[in-house]
Structures are given as C-alpha cells and as structure tokens.
Image (tube, rainbow, N blue to C red; front, side, top):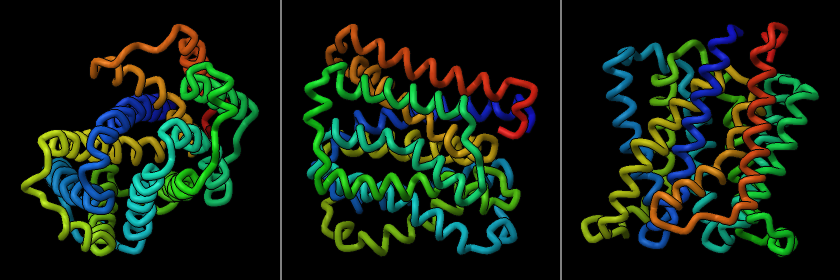
Length: 302
C-alpha cells in the first residue's frame, strides 16, 4: 500500500485511542444510571443518524451501496455485542481487571487476521506487540507487582473477554467484507444494523428507562459516546482497517491506559506516580516500531 495511506491509518488510530479513552472516564460516571442495553441502543441509533447525515452530505446514500446487507448485520452484531458484553462484564469485574483483559485485543486481532485474511505478523510486529503489552500492563497496574499478582479472572472478566473476541473478529472482517464503499457509508450501514439488533435485544430495558428523569451527566456522557466515541471512532476504525493489518490496528489499544490517565487528570483527578511514565514510554516505543515497519520501502505488504 502507499506509504502515505499507511501513515494516515496510523494517525486515524492515534485519534481513535484518545477518543476511546474518554469513553472509559465518562462512561464510568454514568454506568450505574442507565441499563447497558438501553444506553448502547440509544448510542447506536443517534450515531447512525449523525453518520448517515455526514454520509449523505459527502458521498450520498444509494441503495446499491448496501448490497449484501448480511455484511452489515454481521459487523453490526459483532460491534454491538462487544459494547453490551463490556458493560455487562463491568457489573462484576473491577476496572483494572477489565483493562488487563482489554490488552489481549491486539493478539486476538492478530489471530483473527491470520484466519480471515492470512495476514502475517512479522518479527518486528511481534516485538512491538510484546513491548506494547508490557507497557500497557505497567500502566494499568501502576507499576505495582502486588496489584498484578492480585488480578483475578472471574465471571465479569470472562464475559468481557468474549466481547473482546467479537471486537477482534470485527476488525479483519471490515477489510474482508468491504466492497469499495467509503468508510463513512460502510460505517452507516453497520450502525443501522447494530441499532436494529440492540433495539430488539434491549427493548425491555429501553421501555423501563425513565429517559426524561436521567441525570444531566448521563446526557453529557451519552453525547460524548455518540459523537466522539461512536461516530468518529467507528469511521476512524473503518478507515484504518482498510490500510493496516488487524494486529497493527488494535495495537493502538495499548495506548488507551495512558490516554485514560490524561483524561483523569483533565477531569481533576490526581496525576499518577512517576514510575507510570516507564509504561507509557514502552507503549510509545512499540508504536514507533510499528510505524518504522510501515515507512520502510519493502513494507508495502504490511
């Protein structure tokens, strides 16, 4: 692929990781005020309306763009399943434990990429993924070995793990199932399908939710999830998966814990200890290795 296209894919995932991190900080503030299915159904419906408006204004929406609708149903189901399983898992899983499970995403995506697209993880990529994984875990457990040893894999972690599997399969499937549709149009189709699935799955929770009585913070959080953590990130992810291997795309999840720290500081919470900077440095080194792999003249197949 052209080097500038790969670079744009990396920049897209850099923005993706920063925006997703914000959903962790804001999402934790509203998690107990609304049911997961109701929250994500509203999220997908509103995001579909927003992305659909952008798609109409930029590329137009035509029926032939949505041929083989089963593709969008499959992708929408996988992505909707990830979000629902994440929230259900967080009902019993500690945030630190869930974040540790989240770091499995690049490896899972690499495995799914091989099975679905026969994408090969090069030695450089494997080294970068390993360094990034260590750095992410260092940040998550705040450089505390005792905290790492206290990690427990319970029912909530197991539920969230299967959500991560769904997300990992979703990533290479985007490239496999895309038939030349622009990322924003393809994202719109996926969002509509996911919204329909969530409306059916979560209808009882949707009806039981007192929408007009929700706290203001819920609407603020939902607004962020819709505009930035859904609409923007879905398009960024679609774009990146068309230009980068699945393992490289999901390697940016290693940056999420570091971005979360910045979000927490911005929201007025105390800064972490200096030792955390070691973990952040490792994730940056890992990403530089991945970027260097793309910028080499012989890396066109990466």
